[in-house]
Image (cartoon, rainbow over all chains, first blue to last red):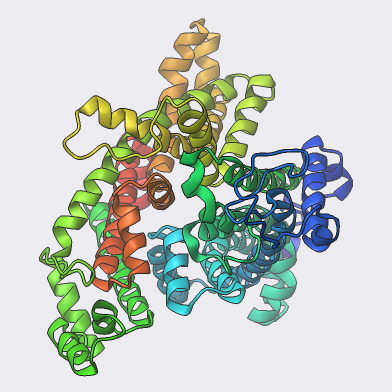
Length: 288
Length: 317
């Protein structure tokens, strides 16, 4: 323990919070951010610039192929698919970020505790985490949604809770690396309490890891929300939503009405790819 | 080695036990009375109570858990509420179907992923590398049902060359079954190609930069020999472990793919059981997936330590 008093305090952590200028220079980030911005604008104001109402049914014009009047055609109830795609970004862009935020906050707290306190607590919670990870996230999610009943709040809670152990695991290993470093021994010698060390000493140094986890998990959250909606566990079938619209219409692909499912599917693809381009840019800059 | 194996096995058993408790009590949270669910809303309360008694669901929870778990250990998975028939045969035939789909997917994913990753590593920073990384990342982040719909629209609807249903019937000839499985396998391959390629790329780059690879090059071996004899042997080790840990995610993907392509596998079985509140079926299905995941991870660990003797002492010591 004596050597820490003479050893110079070096910055042993290579990972720093990303310089936004470096991130913004990456073409992947620019493309991803533009697509993301487009969908956020649609989520906020989509209903005011969509060419038709997303809800209005025209029962005399059902299953119309794409035309100049209906760019993406109409669905089985004669609703304009283009308008529903624009407005449908709202539900997913509300649920996924909130769920990711919940999972990140809980996961970071748990990871800090696991990594720093260690011992029996780490061993017991580690087993629990392993048990939950043995079952695919989609199955865990729909089990709980069936149990509690579908709603936006349930979805946020369930996805947040599923992400908690995953994020905790990553944060835990980052904390364990930090725990080896001299500044923590120094802090302990100064008599700082455990909670204080975790929050004021370790947390700032694992924040880059947390940020990368958040952006990567956001992509998975979009993926999971869309998949749950497709499986029929969406919030409300009448509300326009990409996954639930696909669920409602994929049965008629065989009849040749491909536009009712293909366009919402492409919308989901564009959103997840955009988020992953952004996440990948941040990750690369953080990793140096 | 034996001690290490025993320890890993012990931990796996404990994890499975915790999983069984979670599944069982999560199943109890599901709303609705099993007797009511089977008999429908118009059955009399006395008939519902009688059926509940017959099913044993009116006993205390701990008793129910004990009879369920001791049955499961002996291979008795209970009676399905939905079909009023033993769970085990239905579960096994669904597992058989899922195994066909998963095996077909793995046969394509492993060589494609490793090949793509090695090619990317040999061109690290170059156009091939960027192409493989970007394609892999994009394909992996698109949900399976989205890519599934795209391939259905193209190959089943527009070109009409492949069926959009995955199930050819259990008695269908091998070639026909394979043909029906081509479209469902594509989303699964898309999902895992990028991840495996990324791992294979990282392992290969690390091996390429190692001292032994440099020595091999400097002593005049041809590039091909260096790559096949020295680099690949070392770089593929971590990839094997990664493939095994992906088995769990593969099963998650099966739920969606089987639902989309109407294929009677274990994913669709669990999905139906959950929506129909068929607890015995649901619990048996989810527990089986947990066992498969545990066995796959354990095998990966053992394989990894067998192939890489340096790890053995590192872990037991």
